[in-house]
Length: 168
Image 1 (cartoon, rainbow, N blue to C red):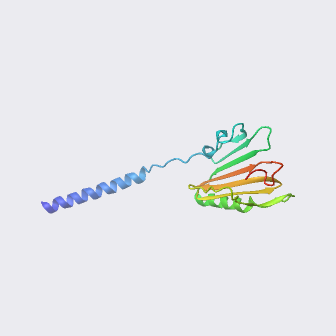
Image 2 (cartoon, rainbow, N blue to C red; image 1 turned 30 degrees about the vertical axis):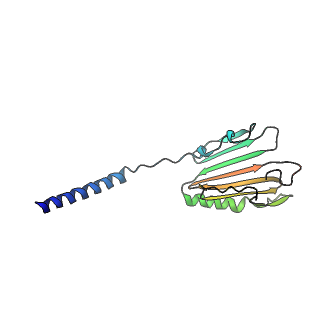
Image 3 (tube, helix red, strand yellow; image 1 turned 45 degrees about the vertical axis):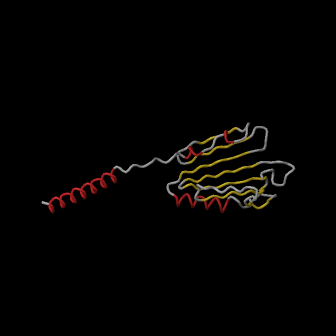
């Protein structure tokens, strides 16, 4: 009786585990990804007076354009929700290789480099790069990859008495 009882208990336990594993595989709960537009920032993160001009709220691509009325300040944000992390890495790499070079028509160019005044390093982004330079006008750009999301920021600001436009 003891051996039969043990075999029955082991078989019952094994059947329960197999059944639970099958159930878990079939009913695998997935957390839905946020929309690209969910990662757009709001004007509340800017100093008082800033507004946004245009907005594209999409599931895969979202864009927003910020400005300060009667001022040369301008910020542009793009968010891409890509199908996987490798594609997002490729997008990051493409922007990194192409966004910090001298434009064809540029007369005034100061190479882009991370400003020494900005010590920020993202603790959540898998890839991150921030640099400022002058390509016709002073500007800074930020690239970040968060899993399968890619975010691009463009900051332009013009201050006449400053070589770097007052960006740093």
